[in-house]
Length: 141
Image (cartoon, rainbow, N blue to C red; front, side, top):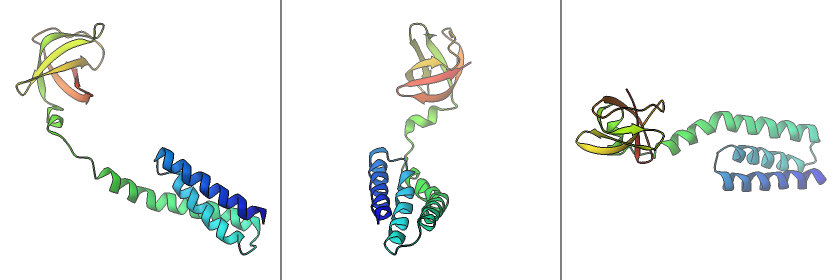
C-alpha cells in the first residue's frame, strides 16, 4: 500500500518539475510513475511496478519526445534580420573587442558588430556575418 503513495507522489513531483522547467523530459517519467501507480492499485509486485515505470518512461521518451519537439520547434518564425547571416559586410567603425565597439554596414543597414575570434578589425575591411547575438552581428574576416 505504501508503494501506491510513493508512485502517486513521484508522479506529482515529476509533473510539477516539468511545469517549472518545460524541458520535456520529466513529463515522460511522470507518466511512467502513473503506470506504476495503476499497477500498485492491483497489488502487483514492486519489481513489476518498477519495470513498468522504466519501460513506459523509456518508450514514451524515445518515441514521443521527438514528435513533440518537432511540433514545438515549428513555431519558430525567421525574421528579415536572418537574411544577413552569411552576407558580406564592410566595417564602418573599427571593431574593438576590448571596448566592445564596432559597426558594419550590410545591405545598406548599419549594425553593431563584434569579431568572432575577438580580434580587432580595421575600418574598410570586408567581413562575413556569422550569426546574430541580440542586436549585434558576429563577424569574421
